[in-house]
Structures are given as C-alpha cells and as structure tokens.
Image (cartoon, rainbow, N blue to C red; front, top):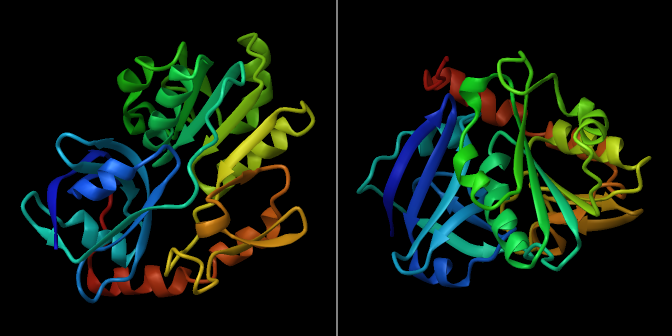
Amino acid sequence: MFKVVERSMIVPNVHLLTIEASEVAQAARPGNFIILRPDEQGERIPLTIADWDVSAGTVTSLFVQVGASTAKLARLKAGDTIPTFAGPLGNETEIAKFGTVVLVGGCYGIGAIYPIARALKAAGNRVFALIEARSSFALYWEDRLKTVCERVLVISRDGSRGYKGHVTRLAEILATEKIKPDRLIAYGCTYQMMEVSRQTKPLGIKTIVSMNPIMIDGTGMCGVCRLTVAGETKFACVDGPEFDGHEVDWEEFLARRESYNAEEVEPLHRSGSCSHF
C-alpha cells in the first residue's frame, strides 16, 4: 500500500496528489507518468509526474475530477493509502540545449510542464511558459514556473488575466512577444494540444505533445492507448507519451478519447459524486 501525503484541491476541480513512493521518486524524470488505483475496485489511472522529492521519497501529480475514478481520488485524505502506484512509466522528455523553448500548459498540464522547464533551464535553454485557463481563478503554480522560466505568459478565456482567448491566439502571441521558439512542448487537454500543433505547423516550429489517452496496463500489453503517428500505429504508454504534434492523427485520437465517456460519466452522476463549482 502507498501512503497519501497530501491531496488538496488547488483550484476548482484541479487536485494535487502527493504519494509516498521512494523508488518511484528516485527514478522519476521529466515527462514520465505513473499509473495508480484509488482502491482495490478502482480502475488504473495514468497521471503525469509534476514533481518529486528524492529525499522525502514523494511523487506529486495533478489531476482533474471528471469521472467516477477521479472522484474517488478527490476524496482521499492525508494518511490514506492506495493499493497501486506504478512507475515511472513512459519515455522521458528529450532534454538538450535547443535554444529557445516555449512550454504551453493548461489544466493539469500547468503542473506537468514544471519539471520539464526546470530540466531545460538546467540544460542552458531560454525557457518561456504560456499557461492558459478559463479564468484567473483556475491558474496555479505561476510563481513556481517563474523560478525556472525567463517569462510566464498567461491566457484566460474571459480576459481576467493576461491575453484574452485561447491557444488559437498562440501564433499572434509569439509574434507580439517577439519570441521565436526553436522547440515548443504542450501539455493539456486534447483540444489544446491539437490546436497548438495546428498553430505551429505553418511556422515550422518543432512541437512535442504528451498523448495521455485512456490507459489500462501502461506497459504496452493491452493496446487501449494506440494512436496513429506519421501513418504508423503507436502505443502512447511505451512509444510515448510524447510525440511530434504535427504527425499525430488528431481526428482519430479525438474519436478514441470519446469511447469511454458513458462508462466514466454516467456512474459518476448515478453515485451523486459529481461536484459543481
């Protein structure tokens, strides 16, 4: 069993989860993910590693409460235990001296880009972050990102902070800020990563996205997380989770993401566990 050190809602519907797992903490690298189960009857849930502390033996991830399984996670308290915490899984982010790198994060991805930014800065890059949310109240970890980024830019859909709108304005924002990335990395919802890839393709900016669809096994045995990249079938868990966003078949991926909506959302509403903010 793995001990819960902290579980807190840091902004509406986004939760921070820190687990005591010393072996995972020692091996964790930027871009890795873990698979956990909230209880013995729970499904396996993939979460990107947002931070780790080797001395304390802890691993931190962010998750969004959207279905029955994440609702179980959201009810955990410090001192509780969970039966499964496997990792680190997936290939780590390529870290090298690229020049100027822009990291785009939304939702859980704001936390997920933090260790990548930290490693890229240590490798000698100029690192910028662009974080987006529907409103200023949904932003978090901005101060933490500022410690490893040259600048942190903000997009809010209601205009309450930074630029108003969505990542559809990415090309415009890069031009306005006079930032010319040699590489861009995006972590967030499917639509965000797809739109970022569409914005950067005409600009010729190498764009990396983290494809974390529904996973069950997490080690390439089940095939649930397959997707098409550059015309070839890949498994997000073992071939990724990061891929070139310009090579992903986004339409196919969107269709696969919707396959299990009923199984996740309907039990949540029947159980009365749905939270409203």
